[in-house]
Amino acid sequence: MEENEDKIRILLVYGKVLLECNFDLAEIRSDMYHLMNQMGLHHLSIFMTQTSLMLIDNTTDNVKMIKIDSYAYNFEKISHIHELVLQLSLKKISLQEFYTALVAIDKKSYAFSTPTQVVHAGIICGAMYSLINGWSNLVFVSFILGSFGYFCFLICQKYLKIKLFTIFLYSIFITICSMILYKVLHLHNDFALILSCMMPLFPGATLVNAIRAGINGDYIVSLSQGVEAINTALMLGLPVAFLLTIAV
Image 1 (cartoon, rainbow, N blue to C red):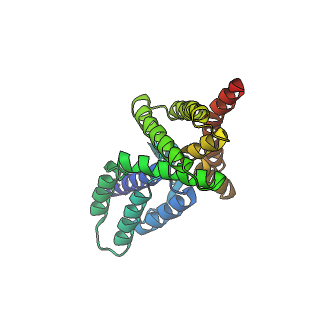
Image 2: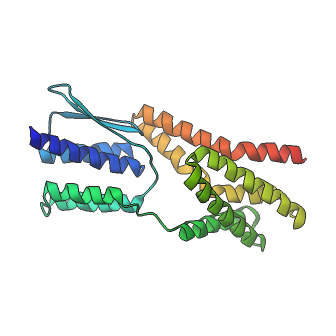
Image 3: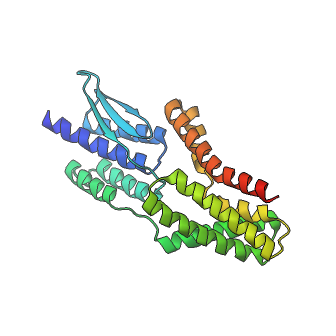
């Protein structure tokens, strides 16, 4: 019985780490059932949403649950976990070693450094501007504005801890700066600069995952991810619409 409890704890941590990495729910469910078969836990069922994971014992109706506090895309962490699962499948490591390595991966962030994130955000903004308006010196303006705006976003996110509000502040900052640059540099189109600098926070991946979850039958997750994508889009778009309207 105690051995089964240890195996359930391993499964909960495994699912929690993958959910925090925003991995596809259908893939998580498939991987967890594969692990359960390896461990001989054929009497368990899985229920998961974006914020929780439950393992249900079909023989006793006991439920073990773990809460998901935050989630963000982390493909490097997912890759390390899959390597661990492969080693476990090949019997190169024991369950205890698997659990220890899993906990170590969970505690490690594997995040890019702040300068790297800022530079890549600027590159996205510059590339998007060149796609909209073609190549010009304003690509570098978009790069600088996007980089600085994203840096301010990361700082606000660190202290405010409210993602939607920091997205809202980011949108206000980008819009005001773009409007000022429009006047100073005599730009033909300030909206192109605004749109290109919104790209680092655009919820495209979240929306795609919401549609995918709906197709797979995970309607609760699909709904929550869809609402998140809509909220993000609103926080990005409302300040732009309001400020451009009053500026006319």
